[in-house]
Length: 495
Image (cartoon, rainbow, N blue to C red):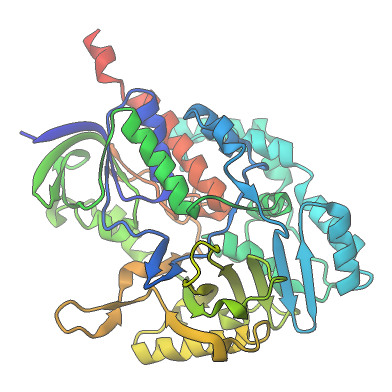
């Protein structure tokens, strides 16, 4: 007998699963969220604020999916005021050029013409061609069925849905960046960073969609992504759900070979029955919690064969406040070779954090993120130190006195071993990026939502990751639709 029972058990605190939990709890399902080694995206290092990821938020005014979701959980009015548009939204810096982009189209045209004379019209035509189907894309995504389709009937319904929405096929015409422009890297790097699916070639649909969100600007939210997660968690708790942040699932118990019956949670050890189990963390280690003798060999073999091609590498430089000039934006894209598509520390996403006057002793933080190929991921501390030095050298293009004002370097990838006290690599901090889309997910996802088990589903950062933040919410809404069709509320059964 299980010690407790919930309709929905969500393992992990990625944004997508928490959004799904908020929808389910709002409709009367009993929801449990298990922390599964939860790690905040923003944390303290001494008296400094440091980041595990660049806190870029976008799509609040350019995505019907986001608006519909916040309406469904009762937060639409609040979310009209909470996210604040950053101005300038983005600064792009290349050798000898600095461009500030914001919400005013005429000002952007003037900035582009000043930085790259004769190119403003060409670039704006390119952006316009990518964004002209915005309303049709909104409708297409807002009602998109769960991917991948299940069985012959599911594939028939998906194909019928695609035929009703010409925008999907119309938008598949490749988006060709104007070759006459002298800054390929800033635009392509921007799109790659917003996506968690680094496929080649990039999905034309996701490119157009992400460009629409970029045109809508970037936003600040109190406590960033952690603040949004906290809102979703409060919605779950307000509607009768439970949240166990310090606990983890250590085993998945099957009934037969295709249905999850319960999970074993430790600290303290308890058996929790469930009707739907959601993997809201990395799929590979979580699926290994199913006893090996009961695993579907073919499905687990596919999952294990998926290897990341890239990683998002983040390093924080804690600095004296005087280093950050007042003209430097909160979000900055630095590209040292603008004519090339480069990876590594040559292209950096930079987020600056300067504490308020209420924290006079707190230093500032420069968080730099770059995308590196998997074969270049450092394995030893010395390799991390050398990569951090290369990032620092790139940053000196915009902050020439960085080395003199540097207080310390904080890399989330490093942790202290409790037994030896020595620094070691922490695999749980690695942010993986895949390059092969899962078949049947319209080139939008690296992992499937459905698994070989009837009531074990996958959300998290990689499902529909090609659409970035919007993909996380879209996945939640898709799975909620599946839940309403397949999981009848217990109180309805009693009636």
